[in-house]
Amino acid sequence: MVKICCIGAGYVGGPTMAVIALKCPEIEVVVVDIAAPRINAWNSDHLPIYEPGLDDVVKKCRGKNLFFSTDVEKHVAEANIVFVSVNTPTKTQGLGAGKAADLTYWESAARMIADVSKTDKIVVEKSTVPVKTAEAIERILTHNRKGINFTILSNPEFLAEGTAIADLFNPDRVLIGGRETPEGQKAIHALRDVYAHWVPVDKILCTNLWSAELSKLAANAFLAQRISSVNAMSALCEATGADVSQVSHSIGTDSRIGPKFLNASVGFGGSCFQKDILNLVYICECNGLPEVANYWKQVIKVNDYQKNRFVNRVVSSMFNTVSGKKIAVLGFAFKKDTGDTRETPAIDVCKGLLGDKAKLSIYDPQVSEDQITRDLAMKKFDWDHPAHLQPLSPTSNKQVSVVWDAYEAIKDAHGICILTEWDEFKNLDYKKVFDCMQKPAFVFDGRNVVDVNKLREIGFIVYSIGKPLDSWLKDMPAVA
Image (cartoon, rainbow, N blue to C red; front, top):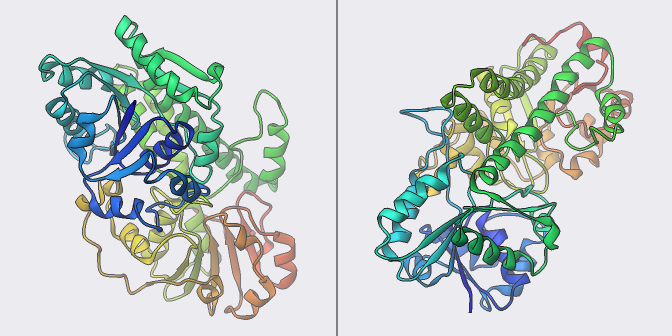
């Protein structure tokens, strides 16, 4: 019986292994992690991550051919294929600080694999890693192998949170990179056979190691670039009276461009986009390509500009001060259908408003008060370290309250900031909302989810990203 072990029970390792177990009932799949609370959650009725469809998949397989354990060394030793899905945060100090990936957790995983292995193994990179990581890991394993053969593969994930299970069931492609040697090709075929249980073979792409590693960074950079491109256009639309939704729809009908990732917003978030672009920038700089590095840096600069622009618009519209004013923040996750707050634009927007002494009342249907409090107190890049290495939960900020009802958040507020496109925010009773707010009542829609004209008829002053400005707002330009 083939046995697969995955080191790391996070957003990638958990769902990916659950689907492999579901689709390959003859393969035993064990997900291991040193964090006992996380493993306990995977073994409970309350999984540690929210992802539509994940509960059903886990419940069908758990205890049959899918297991979650803290006994890392035992299961790694027994496995034929070891996936490594550990954190690869951005370095905060030393060489490459602020850009390069920190491979500390990857290296310790590789050394542990070498120490405990008694049989030949295929080791699969599942984390997003810089190009040439496989080479470094290969050297660690080779120098510590004690007569055992290790073959390295790169198998980057291309999941979108909120649709991860659907993406795993029906992927656009599965990418497997390996050495162009007989051993490397044999390992590629072994992993391809696992995915071929449910993925058509023509969708399983086999490349060399470096192409697979770079493809992941490139894919995320291209997607982030599209978001920054349409967000840059949204600023121009506001300045000229154009409507960014109409512009996006118009260019999206061009088959060469396509309609996806063209929704203007307060900015992109998530665990990968910024981190991977910074990584790409660092690789370009290390390879003597400063012009290429500067090109990709601009994608992040526009994203930061968009968040700052939103905060400035809020403050300038409300008589140039939000000091002591209650502002309802609707949505904190980086997008709907996930509880993930990593790099969410809401963090920078909230910090910007708090910097102007606003009082925030935050509501998100999937994000806990503890997580929001942590995020607003954490330093940049701290979030990407394992939970037990993150700062202890800070004392709550007196300017921030977290509530579990949108109407409670809105009551007596001067303004509403919509920062996540949860469907429920489209369907609020905005007449009821208007009646319980301070006047003038402002809505700042960072996701373009509300019907602007209907809200203006009710009496709101509305700012919607990239849309023609309310006459009130025209007199109060946002200074970036």
